[in-house]
Structures are given as structure tokens and as C-alpha cells.
Image (cartoon, rainbow, N blue to C red):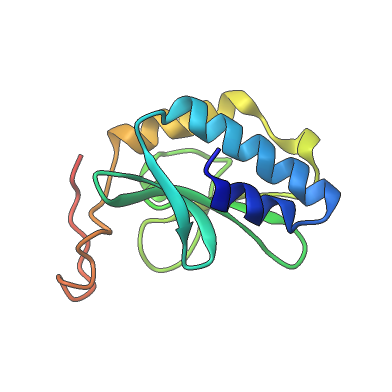
Length: 129
């Protein structure tokens, strides 16, 4: 695991740390060629410079965010924001369904919107895949 991401995880309380470590392990296993780093203060994985998935500690949960998740057609993902992102939130590690996350990660590789160039395109998203 990326040292910065491990440090982020280690700063969480024990339950959230377990959630974060589990999410990072699942993501790393399923996106072995993705670049990962702390981006805007949260762990994020990128394919070709485009953000794909990340997680962040919220007040009452850990949020797993897929930048193109609204296009996945997955009822367990909740729309987030005004672009194409969708999320799942966890308050304990037992809520994490590995099969769901692996399926979402597969879709995250197959369905991508171009967030990398969002600012250059003045807020207009274009589908890459």
C-alpha cells in the first residue's frame, strides 16, 4: 500500500482504520496498474491520470466514491454531486461487500468520464469509455 495512504488510514479511529485498510486492499488488488496517492486530502486511484475511485472519512462514516459511478447502473450506489459520481458509505467493516466493490471496480475501468480535463473543458464532462 502507498505509504501516504497507509498514513491516512492510520490517522482514523480503529473501526474506520479497518474499513479504510479493507477498501485500500480491495482496490489495490483489483486496480494493480492504477496510480494511487493522497489527492485533495483523500486516497484516490487514477487510470491514465483520470480519478477512478477513492475514499474519505466523513463525520459518521467512510465514503467510497466512484467518479463515474452514476453510469454503473448499480442500485447500491448513491448519486453524489452534480457530475457523474456515486458513493457507498460504511460505518463498520462488516458492511463491506467485496463482490459489490469488485464489480464496481470492473465497471470503473470500463466506464469512465474525463475528470482529468474537467477544468480545461470548463465543467463539461466527456465520456472516455
